[in-house]
Length: 139
Image 1 (spheres, rainbow, N blue to C red):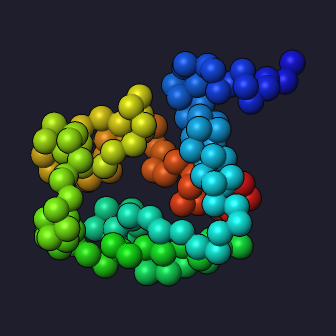
Image 2: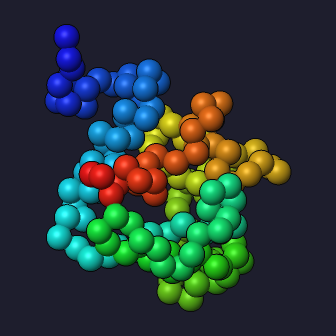
Image 3: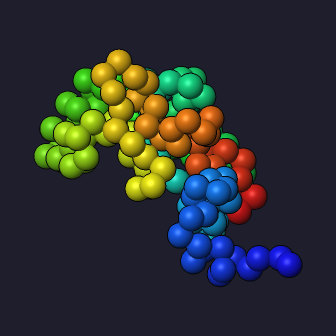
């Protein structure tokens, strides 16, 4: 039997059983739908977040549109200064050790000395939800 998207979306344990399917249905597809008709979009990825993000350009092709990474070249101190200068508060979970914030069941606080994204999909080997991979352009 083939599961329908509606059934999968209502499955409260999908994140634990199949995090890739969960991200595709709850993040990638909705964003691809929201971006339809736009020529570009902005995001907040930064090179200091490491891993595949260490070399992101300021502008990149993302399927039929351009993706702008305006914070890519900024370090943590510069990001904090920009937030402060714009009167933007830090995310409320930062004070609890969350240095990269995603979905509730797939995000944990990081420990001192850990990579900023270590709390994302902890222990799963997953590093991106898919919106920054080719899945978004395929929508």
